[in-house]
Image (spheres, rainbow, N blue to C red):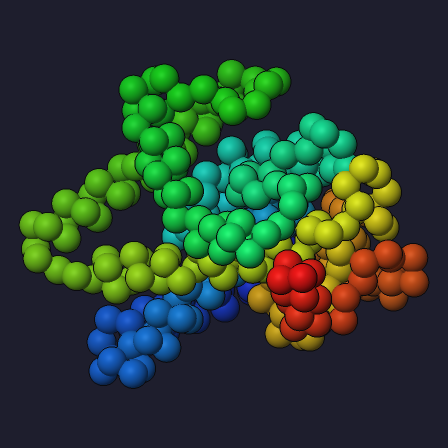
Length: 286
């Protein structure tokens, strides 16, 4: 981890914020055809922010460890992703991938049979929002409990605090919208979030689905999408997922340097996302 790595990460956050600002301006002020473009750009930046948050939760974004939590919290707010909760469950995922103790934050078990109906439900899993809202309420009442074992009380307190922050933001935004009669929050948050939820699922799905789930060998239980420069930027190099699981302490932007050496050893290397989804649909519809 170097100062150059930190500067690169900060630059990606700035680009994300700039694109989100442009998308927000279109979504709020442009005539309808262009307004749709704004919604799509905002949704894409919500998802991109979660991919940036993913690097932060591995503590590979900054040389100093202190900025990781506040930056991670902010990056997760648009998609209502609690930073510390995500971090703890995701690190468990890295530790137990390939075993029956594997768990992921976004509640999609790639070890289960994938039918067309299940794929459709998972793609549009808006029920996640209800769970987030429930977590916000129980964090305020003091009744929120970790959903897996071994969480230190100090970390549980952090999770509750972050859910209370999110809940407070939702209440304030809703209250201001009602009081002023403004639909700005609908255009800038609700509609993009409706688009971001399925987009995020489609970005995450290739990582382990239809790989071998009974081995801890990352060359066999994980998939890399070689992708393009755009997809590598958009996923913050998380498309190189074998590389990430093989060495999760490497800053995400450095994973392309590892890829040429690991590619020949990978069982489930895929050239592009389009190739993966063509194969997926063939298997699901078979």
